Length: 112
Length: 113
Image 1 (cartoon, each protein chain N blue to C red):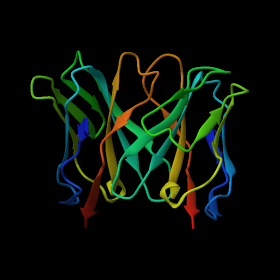
Image 2: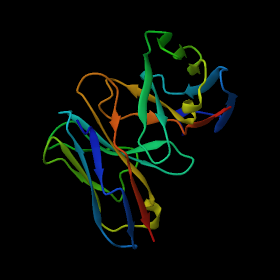
Image 3: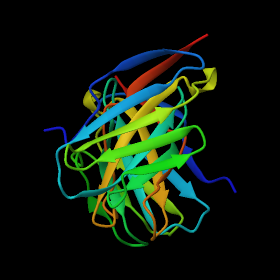
């Protein structure tokens, strides 16, 4: 079991460029989440999904879009990157019972 | 407004002593609380949790205490070991938790030899 994996691990973008972060989980979990972590801050929820084909907004959704076309994958898109989106992005998944979320290793994104 | 607060950004404890990490919350709808541990350049890993119907949960060296009336929880680590040096996040959940966790800012625990 690889658990939750994230691709890429690091990325540098210029302002205005677009990119997609991929999250994959092999635990057959229903729920998936995208968080961002900024220095001195806790994790903040960007978007989440409670099942294949569903998505919903979290606390800080502006500037991001997501898709969950397959149960095991959750994609986070930045259409036009801004320096304020420089952050570490974590994906997580959860069973449909219980409260524990399992996190991936993170993607460090820098927008210049 | 922060709904989950960890007011100590860092804490230094001698090896072998007890580490106590604190967390306060404001939202009465929170009914489940979790502690995560995070090493640099890694994702958070689950440590221990507690339901709001309990006031204590223990797992080996880790114990979490919940005081609902004070909206306060604490994580006790005893004895503290060098490998416990990490950032600890308190997180809260409500109503089954499908819509994500609310995290505190974290406390950096440093275990001194």
